[in-house]
Each structure stands twice: as structure tokens, then as C-alpha cells.
Amino acid sequence: MFCKKIILTSLAAVGLGSFVFGMDAVSYLRTFGQEVRNTVKSNVSLDFEVKRAREMVENLIPEIHNSYHVISEQQVDVEYIEKEVSDKEAAIKVQEKAISKLNEDLKTGKSRFVYASHTYTTGEVKEDLARRFNRFKTAKQALAHDKKILAARKKTLIANEKQLSALLSSKKDMEVKIEELDSRLKSLKAQEAISTLEIDNSQLTRAKKLIRELNKQLDVKEKMLDTEGKFSDLIPVDSKPVSQISTKSITEEIDVYFNNAKDIETDVEKETEKSEKEKDNSKTASVQALQLQPAS
Image (cartoon, rainbow, N blue to C red; front, side):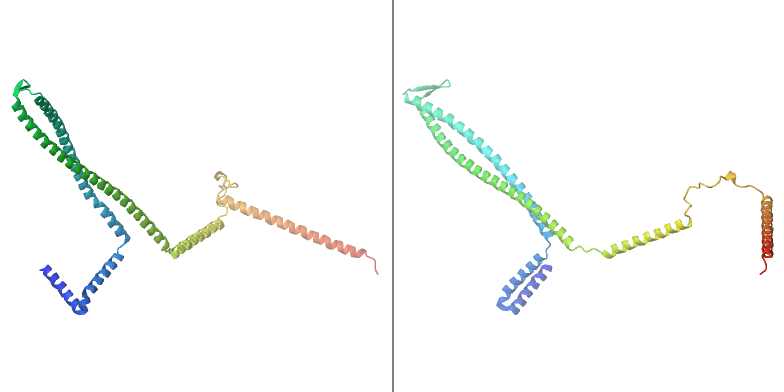
């Protein structure tokens, strides 16, 4: 049913094309198909094409294995034919010697001949010689035919071996070229990535600003610590041991304080009296000096 719909749709498309374009419908369809192929091909990525080429080379492996199998069979056939030819040549040489021997014996004119303790008449020897000679000629023809077959098999084997060798060499060359293509493609991609690289400088700027602010905050904290306790981290050279700290009671401390205050007041009073006496002495000296001056 589905195939029937496809056929009907195709026929309808062909009919519509013929109606619209007339005699040029085939040309339009051919051109349209070529444009579609070119468009599809141009949109295929280079990665895909390189992968497709690699798969095409890998698809040669079954053919190579089949060629190995065929060549192996041909090599075995050639070996068997060579052995058969060798055996036939040896048998023909034996028969050739026997024929020569019987022919020479008949030329002697004897009436009887002894071979392997058996006696044969001249007629029996002639009949045997004739049979041997016919078989010999037939064997020679068969040997010549086998040699032709052997030569043809060898020629085919050599051609197949050359073809396989060429196929293997071509496969290796294509593998190298595909690897070169892949390397060039990767290098091209790396160059494109570098040329189209866009760095977000705003992120870098924000990071630098944050680091600068953190350094500033740390500087402020260090200044505060220096101001609050410049000598807190020094060795307490002048500090007295705990054992030397005064352990007087509060009453003794008060007595000492007030006694010291009284001593200070007494000292102040003495200094005041001394100062007043000095002033009085000074006044007296001035009066006396005036009295001693002569009247004008």
C-alpha cells in the first residue's frame, strides 16, 4: 500500500512537471536534482567526509581477505599441478627408455627375447612396443597440455599476487593520506578557534577590582591594629614580676596617701613663709636705702 502511494505520487509529480514545463520537464528535473545534490554535498562537514573516506578504505579489508583466500587456493593448485607434471615427466622418461630398449632388441633379428625371466616372441615384443609407443605419445600430449595449464595458472597467480600487492600498497597510501587530512583538519580547526576566540574582559576586570578592594580592606585593618596597640607586640622589658606587685591592704594605702598629702601641705606652707620673709626683707632694705640718700 505504501509503495503504491509512492508510485502514484511520483507519477503525479512527473505529470505536473510535464504539464508546467512541457518538453523541458526532464531538463528541469535533471538540473533540479543536480542542484539538490550540490547543496547537500556543500553542507556536509569535512569531518564527515574524512570519516567516510576512512570507512571506504576499511571496506577494502573483506576484499583483501577474499583475495588472500583466492591466491592461497591458486598457490595450492599450482603446487599440485607441478607435482603431477613432474611425475608424468618421470614416467615418460621411463617409458622412453623401455621403448628404446625393445626397439633395439627387435633390430637384432632374434626370434625370442627374455625379459624379467620371461620369454617373449618377436610378435609379442612388437605388439607390446606398439602399445607402449601409442601410450607414450598420448602421455606426451597430456604432459604438454598440463604444462600449458600450469603456465596459465602461474600467470594468473602472479597477476593476482601483483594486484593484491598493489591493493595493499594503495590501502596503506590512502591510510597515510587520510591521516594527513585528519591532521590538517584538526590544525585548521585549531587556527579557526584561535582566530574566533572571544575573551570576556569584564569578568577579568571584576576579578581585579575585587582583589584591589580586598587588599585595601586588609590595609585598613592592619593600620587599626597598629594604632590601637603599637607596643602590644613588643617584649615587656620594664614589666615587674607578679611577685613584686604590692599586696598592701586598702587601709595602709589610705594612710600612706593622706600622710603624703600632709607632708606636701607642710612643704607648701614653709615655702610660703619663706617667700613672705624674703618680701619683708626686701621692703626694709628699700626703706633704708631711701633714708640714706641726701636731701636735694
